[in-house]
Image 1: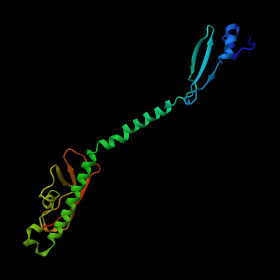
Image 2: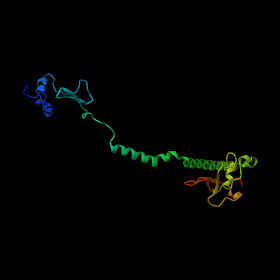
Image 3: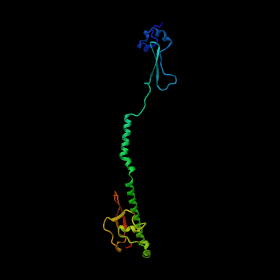
Image 4: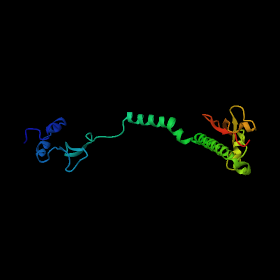
Length: 200
């Protein structure tokens, strides 16, 4: 007969030590609370003996660490996505306005260069015998005649921001500022170029 409760505190709380049969059998069946060999998941197993020699296996999984995203982290991700959706994404999606503005600047640059080249051609003494080297330019619209194709690209028009040059010899070498427009689009800022009177 064993005087002390062989099962320890767990068996004593369960009232097992009052059972004479348990006290006789307990030395052969030790109450255990241990981690199985090779276990790394934090689980422990506890053998609990009840009267009648029934064995229960209790799994303690409280030591396993649960990992995941905190509420603050999830909220910050949602806020960042919201800022991108409201500010950054439209800049990349709607590029039509930027393309039209760049196109207008390209046409204006071509018009200014063509006007300057035409003035140089008209300044040559033999220009009169070579009409293809000098065309009459005195208005913003007439600049189209010195462009490739002889006209402004489809949808483009030009008008002077002041008075047009007169179709007279005195206008040769004079400059005016022309404002370029594109149908269906309002440029911001305005796109302008300089026209040089020539061939008058």
